[in-house]
Length: 327
Ligand SMILES: NC(=[NH2+])NCCC[C@H](N)C(=O)O
Image (cartoon, rainbow, N blue to C red):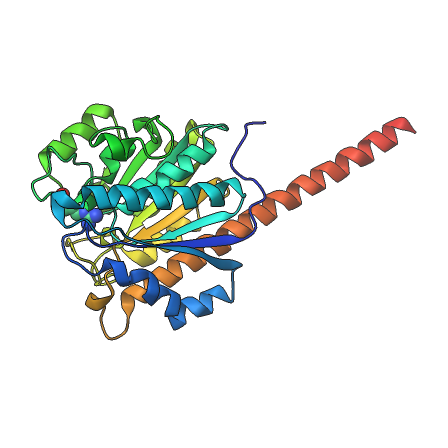
C-alpha cells in the first residue's frame, strides 16, 4: 500500500506567529492574540481537540529590505516549532502573521517529513508571493515566500531547516490568483507550477478546482499542506486584509469544497494575513478564520474515522475467512 501521512495524529497543536513587519500594512502581528481571545474560536475549540503551543514574537530589524534579517530569525524559530509538532505526530495549525511566516512553517514541515517523502502544498491566495529580493518592487517579504520555498532568493531564507528546496514545483498548486507581477509569474510558469487563476476558479467552480489541486499535490508526495491567505477570498467574506483584491473566492463555496476533498493526507494548515483592525462590526473575518478551522478539522477527523472503520471491517472479514478456511 502507498505510504501516506495519515499517521494517527490526535491533538491539533496551534502555533502562533505574531509577525507583521514584512507586510504592506502593519497589523497582522495582532492576529494571533485576537484569534486566541475570539469567542467564535473558543466555541470551535470546544468541538475539536485543539491545544495552543508556542506563540512566536517577531524579531524587528526594520521594514521592507531591512526586514530580511528579522524575518530570517523569526522563520527559523517558527520552523523549529513546526518541525517539532510534526515529529511529535500532532496535527499542525499555524496562525500568522503576514505571509512571510510561510517560509518558517513549511521549512519545518518539509524537514520533518523529509525522511518519509516530499510534501505538497495548496496555496490559496490572490497573490503569487513568488518574488525574490531582486525582483520585488516593494521589498515586502510577504510577497516572496513561494520563491524561497522553491529554493530561489535569499540564501539564508532558502536554507532554513534542511538544505534542500522545501517544495518541488510539480507538488505545488496555487488557487485563486489574480494580482501579480510579471517577474513572479515568469518564475512560476517556467518551473511548471500549476496556477489556478481566479478566472479558471470562476469558470469551473472552486470545488472542481480544489479536487484537481488535491490530486496534484498528493500524486508524488507523502501528504500536503494548506496555506490560506485570507485575501484569496472575496472581501465580502474577509474584509480584514492589508492587500485586498477584488473578485475573490466565495468562502462558503470554498468550505463546501473542502468537505469533498481527501483531507486524510493533510499534514498541516496555515492561515495568514488576518489584519484585525480592518475587520467589520460583525467580525466577519474573525468568524471566517474560526469556521475554516472547524470545517477542516471536523471533516478530517470524520474521514479518518471512516477509513479506520472500513479497515477494521476488512480485517475482521479476513480473519473470519481464515478461520473458516482452517476449519
Ligand atoms: N502576502 C501578500 N499579501 N502578498 C502581497 C504581495 C503584493 C505584491 N506583489 C508585492 O510583492 O508587494
